[in-house]
Length: 116
Image 1 (tube, rainbow, N blue to C red):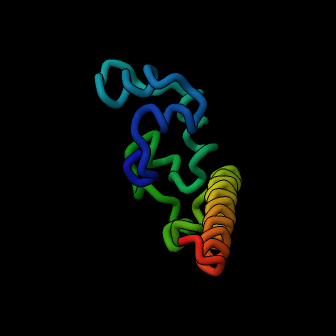
Image 2 (image 1 turned 135 degrees about the horizontal axis):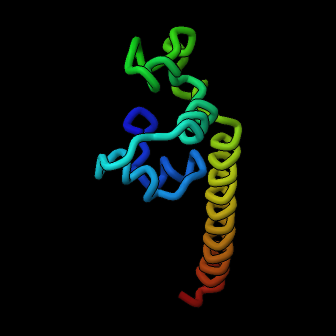
Image 3 (image 1 turned 135 degrees about the vertical axis):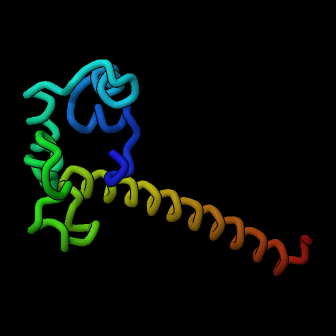
């Protein structure tokens, strides 16, 4: 969770379980992860070393994944969400620019006509 920058709720959402499931394992330490949960984690985070996750042996990351930079670790879904957010921001900036351009043109006309 820490490596991905996720809290309990966002981690649970990412792997497709309710956050109480993760909270019972990570925070309250009253449950142990079952097979289905371990599989979900390994399918969601393909860089996680299964031997480390199940047995606590070896490194957390798979050796071939350790040299990848952060952008190569993101899933397609994450990248699509990021691009959608950027598109929304760009559209807002275009709208603001258009509004300012209209206001500028109106002020310029008023200045030229001597109204100001």
